[in-house]
Image (tube, rainbow, N blue to C red; front, side):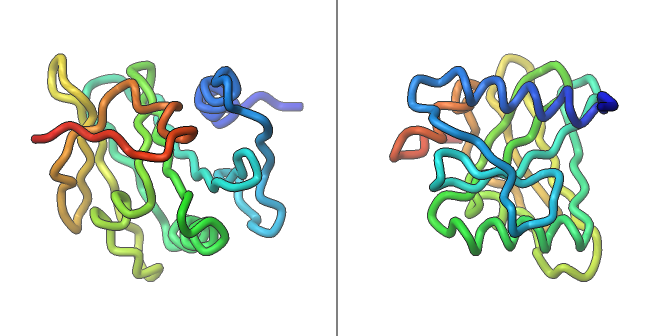
Length: 156
């Protein structure tokens, strides 16, 4: 087996998930041909993107193919789809599909981008070409948000 950057960075996210006390299983989503899509505890869809870039701002590109994959994950898990962004060595930012969709145009015709940034000493923020999410995303949301009923955001 060849060890890729994807293996390392997805591994960071997957290890964090498996250490949670309510974790039971994680699998690739068999009917979605994607290296980014996973099924958690049989009832949640995950889509993982990563960058090795250092700093306090990270941009993630969603090609039309990635947009189709994310949409398929959402169609399979409409109430429980999460996007996980591994931001270099700084941390892991997690958002629900609704937050993601509010920042990006899922037209599936051209590449789109999402930017995760973290002001000095602050929480993560997310923006895209469509708009900027108004609330901060606490650093400790990952992975607990996957196992709790309510999503915790900070007021701007």
